[in-house]
Image (tube, rainbow, N blue to C red; front, side):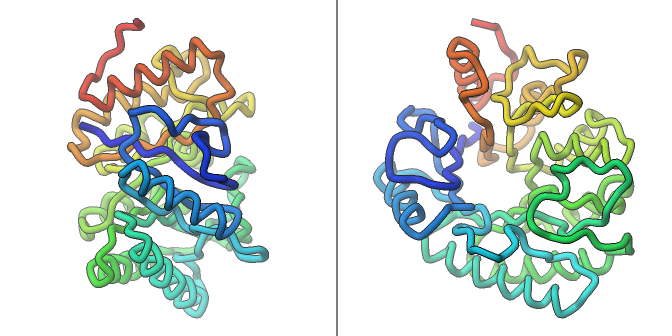
Length: 299
């Protein structure tokens, strides 16, 4: 069975919906991925909710946003001092997550990224300034080695989420090589961002997904139609690439049966972007997928 984690980000007051209006009250959720929260009160409320519901807990770095600080760590930076500082912050965050009884902590990786011609604005989010293109292969490997060692030492799973459009990861095969060398690290694909990364490099998004999804155990799922600036839509099988969608539901349905029983899906969407009947269909499809079904009968 694939595990379903509901995201709890931004402001959370302990109620039965997250900041986007996604219900926490259904029986479908196995856990919560908390992070990017607006303060300690939201953090305390999110942890209390997971404990009350007997859910598994995961952390999306940063667990609490701090004014003036970047949202994501420059773990792959050309300046060694910047990398050391970022790695120290990552280890401190692992220790904090472990104190919260979190099963895992997720970091965006690799960051920062170089500016690319025609790069979609969404790839520049996170408060980090672009850096000139450079060969990040050895730096990325050394950082992964340090994260893998810290993961074992601190007793918490480290998840790396696709980000930063360094060509070596996507045009080349650096992701595949790193994940083969460091199997202790878990790989997360964000369906919407992966399509942007493909567009940034002139790649076919579906082909890039077919290449990387077999290495993925943690899926951030949402549907997008980037040509029209539409994003964070709950995924439905009817959203096909022929109609300009990224086909996130089809990708998930192909991925889930082979991903393993402890693989995780985190629907990172805005449920208000679908009509109620379509949202109900999405939830039924997601429930069926998590229980082992890879096909959709439309009922």
